[in-house]
Length: 421
Image (cartoon, rainbow, N blue to C red; front, top):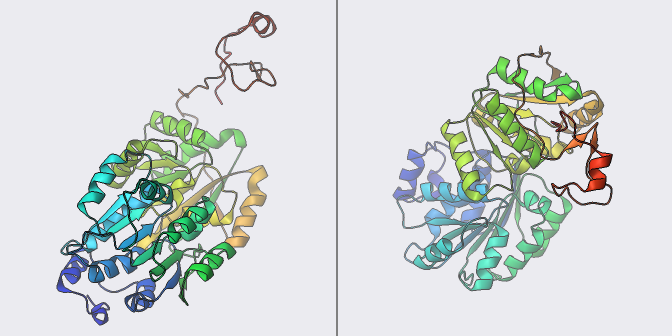
């Protein structure tokens, strides 16, 4: 408990923290918690994985009225996964108190959420859209909210949730306490703070930069046509214990997850078009070690706290250096080592240089021998092509599956007419 004594925590909260392995506060906890307990507004800037959730989790467990069934605190999170993660950590901290947290988010039936809220919950951890849905239905009332937490505020901005956040704030009493956390501080976030916070304390203990000495940054220069083979070769040679492979598009995630399983690795995909049940299952399998390769879009680049990720592999380079920062932040946590590997085609070397300059780092080139034993792809495009040309004529939105007489005459079927992208 060293370092937490000055907060005069209750024995129940102290017991839970001890069981969770909390020995001394992290930098953001040590700097922010005294102000939070004095009921001041704060702006907290710190890189991912620094223990921001415990700042307000401990505060809620210590100060909220456990005898009241009213919602007394709202935490806004940009993604469903982060909402569940925050709720779970608050519940662990408040394990021996009467305080409970519950996540509400879209992508699943609203009825169980309504039933749980009726029973009483002191802390709601919400994605903005689903909270507004509950407010419109009259199933959530915010008149007794004493504290609002806006977590990953810059991610909220990137995902277009800021207007929803402003609308939610309008439903909460003006005398509330507002805690805003963000890895970066763009102008829009500072304007949000200026409008809705009361003389906030600004705490910046560690900007979200990739200067972590425990992470090795390497790149593999490839021919564009060898991207899949290069990934296969690296996975086979390095055998990463726990890796996230980042892709730009959902379709790439779908194909690559099939390919990696075909290669003999335990892998699953994760992207925003998947049902919540499938996303939860993929995350549980990855956390539990049932799979060791998670293939994801940048949905997974922020807020997922998995401590044992050893490798981050950029199958596609991100367009922005900030996104690279967020991806790499999934590894090298809690002082552990980590490796970031980027597959870079020749026409992407300029983009690689931009990331190096913006992040103030130098990546080393790694040479790998392409393994020619890669299994033949089983993943085929559903859209037919002949001689490199699609059957879909200009002006048509999609291929219907049936060809007219003129199409049959112009594009006769040939052997091998289905192309593997």
